[in-house]
Image (cartoon, rainbow, N blue to C red; front, side, top):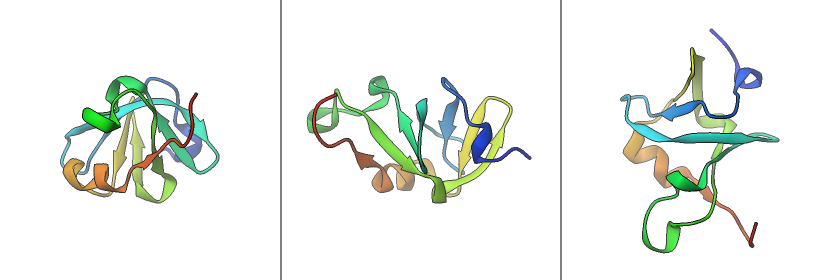
Length: 84
């Protein structure tokens, strides 16, 4: 079993149920920054979202598996503040 330090760019982030949550842009401190293409729709579209290290259950192959199901995990996402 790999750990948080093994997370790399372009890895898929999935919920505990296997549902696609996003794609890793990179790791910033204790958070995973997701790519903009996985930012959602409406007011969520076009900026980065972050997943807290505390939600990471496992890093396996080219996937980061979260401890919450995909539909729940997105409610824990943090939005980027300011422009990038």
